Length: 59
Ligand SMILES: [Zn+2]
Image (tube, rainbow, N blue to C red; front, side, top):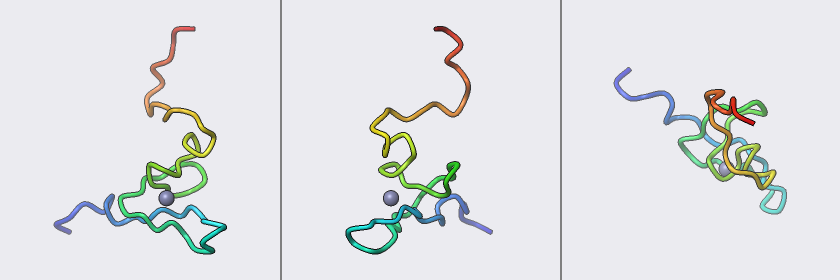
C-alpha cells in the first residue's frame, strides 16, 4: 500500500445523456456515494460546497 486509496475512487454520478458514469478519478465520498468535485450533491444543487467541519455556528 504505497499510494493513497483516496485517489482510486471514481465518480459514480450517472450521466443520463452520455448513458454512462462520470468516472472521474479522485472522487470523494458523499452521502449518495462517490462524487468528483463537479458532481457533489451541493454542486448538482447549484450551491457552493459545504464545509466538512460544522463551522457555521453563526447565523
Ligand atoms: Zn463526476
